Image (cartoon, rainbow, N blue to C red; front, side, top):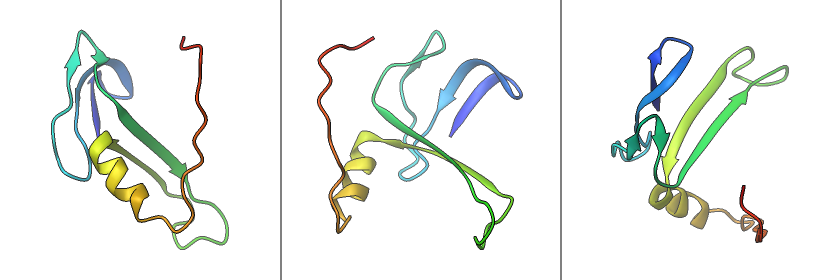
Length: 82
């Protein structure tokens, strides 16, 4: 969960892992650690039609979550980081 200086945007003030609740490191509006941000709109044929869900996971919670997948996460190595 991310909190910004202004509603609907602005500078990032705080970030928390939605799973474990840990406060993530934010300095000068920049998230300074690994975090998975997920936003998914649900549409037709879903029990959540019309809803948009957003959440953030720290790397530890992401690792625990994906370890339970029956089909492993596809991983690609990047050599150039922008």
